Image (cartoon, rainbow, N blue to C red; front, side, top):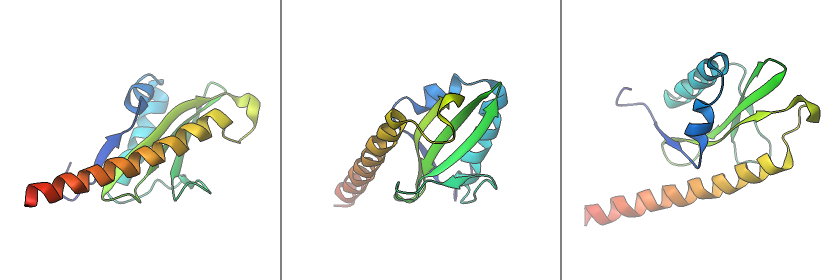
Length: 125
């Protein structure tokens, strides 16, 4: 990681969830997050509408779709909001419980960023 790279902040169980995925999925999703850390974007990354610029990485394996959702719009960090396996039974739409998780973790990311700013200000005084 170079000095100009954004810090990755894993929210909730995202790191554990990504780590539990098959290697064939972890590598490309991890690479997509690495690109975000460098201020770049994976060519196949998709912006999720209605989630304040959150980005979705998708990797298919053995009939299932694995996803990592992150945002870079909150401070100068990459907040990983959700990593999950989506069963193919629901079409391409994100299931409601996963949408709820993403929304909740976006709020958590904003709170974390505010806490970081407050901590920086108090160190400066």
